[in-house]
Length: 176
Image 1 (tube, rainbow, N blue to C red):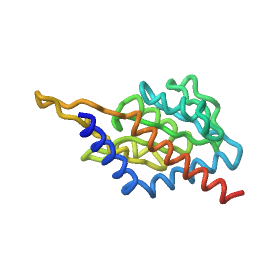
Image 2 (cartoon, helix red, strand yellow):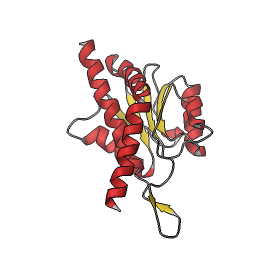
Image 3 (cartoon, helix red, strand yellow):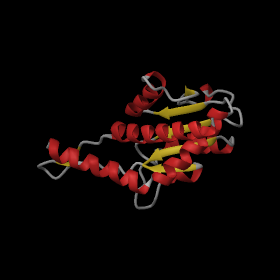
């Protein structure tokens, strides 16, 4: 199973690298606008994807200008025009996350969203300035009864997060 899992996960990473490189660069450029202007980059992920926020805040290489975006709108900060939001979603059609993205869009906040795109696309992408397809649409491993398991949304989200972080670092170095 481990070999199959590793092969499938490597395939996801390769598809992100090949298919989403320009979206990752666009997302990093949008986030760089907040960092360069001394504004905030708010990061959101619910459930297991909260791990990305922990990485952004507490890792040995924290994301510049990062702050957590609360899940309920009543707790949101008073956004400034140059603030940006980075959302990680395991499902691009989650009603609560769709409403959050719509509200952020209405407020004119720059929004980068990483979520899977299905056959119909990603509904949340219509509210985002930049959408990055996580390519993780279903669990990776087949079970004996025909069901599937192994849905590594945090691992895939962290891959996208690091791709954005490295690209942002390059942009900031060019700016200085």
